[in-house]
Amino acid sequence: MEKWGLTIERLNLRKPEGEHFIMKKFLSSVLTIVVIAAILVTPISVSAADGGEYIQSVFDMIVDMYKGDLDNQAVYEKMIRNMFESLDEFTEYYDLEEAEVLFQQLENSVEGIGIMVSDIAGGITIVEFLEDSPAREAGLMIGDVIVSADDKDLTGMTSTVAVNYIKGKSGTTVRIGVKRGGSDKILYFDVVRKHIVINPVTLKFIDDRIAYIKISTFSFDADVFFDRAMEEVKKAGIDNIILDLRNNGGGSVQAAVNVAKHFVPGGVISVLDYESDRVQDIVYTNDLTENPYNLVVLVNKYTASSSELLAGAIRDTYCGTVIGEKTWGKSVFQQLIPIVNYEAFKICYDATKIPMISYYDLFEYGIFVPERYIMGYLKLTVGEYLTPAGRRINNVGVRPHKVILNILTQNDVNIESLSTLYEVKEYNPGDKGPEILLAKYILKAAGYQTELNSDTLDERASEIIKQYQKDNGLTATGSLNFETQKALNRDVAKMKQDADKQLRKAIDILSD
Image (cartoon, rainbow, N blue to C red; front, side):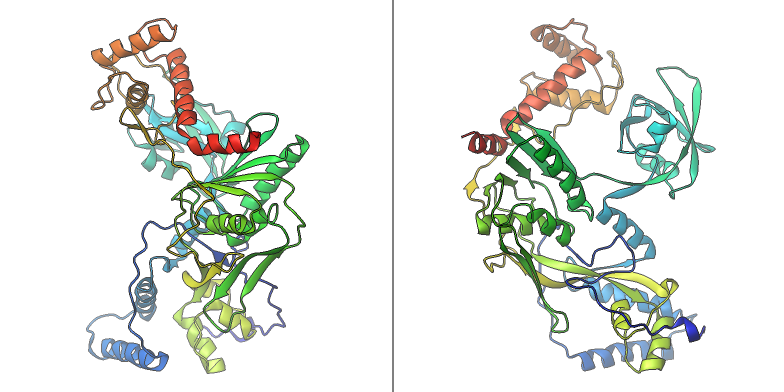
């Protein structure tokens, strides 16, 4: 066993005010995660002493009776995972590989060449570039069909499998082979992968009086992107804002609080009520004298967690009008805690005689654990946040000021699930592909009697497209050409706009 000696440093460290920090520089300590279910199990009360003796007796039995090679570290890691994940649906243990995926999710980032691909046009087709995409800088184009990555032939693969060969560590180079414009000639591009943070904030100007801002998730930099959007709003001289939090499953509490500071007047924004007496509760406040904007907030049943914190703060302080549906109802929050391995635990226990597996606990005692001794990260439910009025909304949700339900279906088609066509390939009778099936759904929603059992542009579908083309003043070819795709996409936008009664109400409120 390695002895740390001088690698164990006793440091004069001061905790940052108001929050704890994790080793990974891009992690915030307190975070909330979207949930799909809310089933709680009442635990049996066991004292720490009794529980410790029980677990030790289990391990002693393994050591005494197990016939085979025993990996202490593996046994402890599996025990920790199962123990914590039995607590509630939000508490989870992540090994180092799983943690890297989690970090990227929380940062809303990717490491790769900055493209979005789809299985259309007879292969893995580039349909969109992310912001600051190195692929676009290298010369790749929307509509390019990727056939290889380095020396790996990707033809015949699904995009889900192929992206594993395209993405990779930031700074590494991948040679991408593509076919362009229907040609069989392969073009090659050397693309340097990079770390790309995806902007979760969308800004649109509905007219010269109303700005619409949607936050899709509270990633750690969401507030920074929101600040940039607000600068654009200020430059435009607009003081009417629609803030769309629908389908926002949460994320960073700090990011949500920072967004709230643009609107919530002086006083409490939220209180983080920690379960442990060892951790001081956090009270987030603001010194804004009054909200300088006319604000409407859109929420629905998938607005959850830290987005509920923001909606609840706005509702309680009446600094804006909240409309839509009652939100999800998750106000418990989690903290990410690095867990040290058995070897580090043993070294520290021998030195302090205090059993500690949390990196934070060791940190408090002035012991710096080298990163290589961290075996994983625990996302543990540690408390519940309260609204400015002191309300607990877990399993309750935030009730809007005005309850308005959107139109969900039109001609038996879910309007919200409709997406636009990519417009990267034209389709002729006999062709197959997911874009053809999507076009059939759009046509059915628009009132045309298409059959949804096939992704083939068959004779019946071609005749319906001809009729659609005639009805819209287009050349009646029966093919799903670019002109027809553009018209269908306009129809999708119009149907979504007409179905969004919540957005229309928000516009009406701010137009009065």
